[in-house]
Length: 254
Image (cartoon, rainbow, N blue to C red; front, side, top):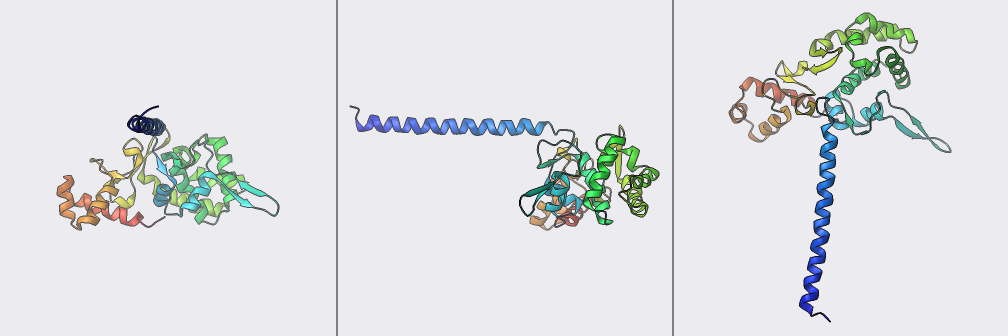
């Protein structure tokens, strides 16, 4: 029969063993998530909430566009598929190309096009232009091609003209590579801010510096002094001002 000290020692060892197992499991889970995130390098990685912020739309609406949704019927539950045509394993993450596509979904929706018509049009466009049709230079850089979207009979020519007019200005902010949107320099950043999926997982950053605008904004909120923030990050005061204004425009967008 073991003494109380021995039993106590055994209990301590038992609980230490459990703790070590839990630590190991957590480490494995974190490593797995890290490896999962690596696949987004160069493609951008946006949570639905961040995408909604950049699109200036409610999170719930962007989630419906990206993932589809379910709804109650009299005796069962119905569902609607997403507008995005890509097969996304992680429904909580969007890539840069998908973000650009949803920018055009937003414009069609703003023009009054029913979601079902946008979805069916996106499906038809994928058959013509391949994956990510609404991020393809072949489509969005050519007003004539955008006008021909009405040929599918789901969107009126007048609406296509509105979207073509938007695209004519929007593509000035986009750099294309291999026929697809590669980077986005939002006009709200006054030439200081870029969204590049190959840098910081696509988070808005300062051109030439790589500092996230969100980081600069948070520091400014704390310090309330543009020059002090500029000195802290070794940036031009103009860049800090543009970063702060950029974040303020999008801060409550979602």
